[in-house]
Amino acid sequence: MTSTPVFYLSHGGGPWPYMPEAREKYAILTKALKDIPQQLEKRPDAIVMVSAHWEGNNTFLVMGNPNPPMYYDYYNFPEHTYHVQYPAPGSPALAKELVTLIGNAGLPVEIDNQRGFDHGAFVPLEVMYPKADIPVVQLSIETHFDPALHLALGQALAPLRKQNILILGSGLSYHNLREIRTIGAEPSAQFDAWLQDVLVKGPVSERFEKLKQWEAAPAARRAHPREDHLLPLMVAVGAAENEPGTCVHHEVTAFANITASSFRFG
Image (cartoon, rainbow, N blue to C red; front, top):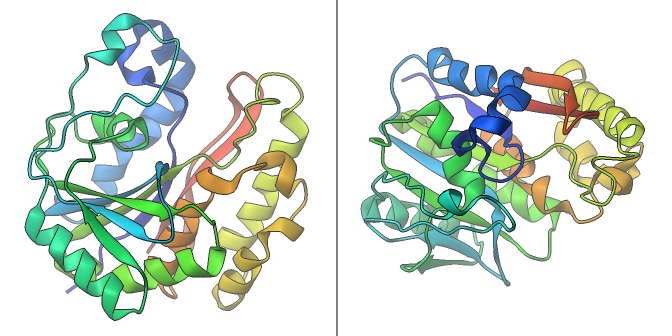
């Protein structure tokens, strides 16, 4: 069976798909997200979503709720955005499989039966699969942000790709909120160029080691003062195994002047 591709998505800011005044600003990202289902051989049977907006302390957390609620983890947005729904079902069976795969890899993991979809999950999914009819299980990152640990998590998830399960890492290739609307243009471009070299242009054999040393990249800590939005990329690359990377979304005007990209592996 063909392996389903893996994606790392730069998901944008806040609940933008639900805000008509924001949609024009996100036209490039919208087009890219809508195209992803067309890049797959068939509709996924389920989605595993690794969101930058969920962190486990000393463990990875797996969403176990069969009917995940909504988790509105954003502030100062229009009132109606705190009532939007993305009613995709969960999958307790897939959640248990994730626990088994991650545990068998020697990694810490727990089920969380309360957690709902955060905007790192439901925002891109609303654009990609607006009918919300594909089961989704969300998976956290780990709050100590060890790149090797998250690459290993991705490797543990890799067998799911043979089961027509779509693995998505959702973050942002540049995430410095203090500089994002002011002086972030140059560091975002520098760090993005490094990502393109490592993920698309460079040899796959060097990808893991370079990502483990990501802090040595140009403007790395300017681009990611806190690397929560970068770690889902590590998971995607781990799940990709030795398959090549392709840039599937690239813009230099995100948030007015920021370079941002999304990537497919396989």
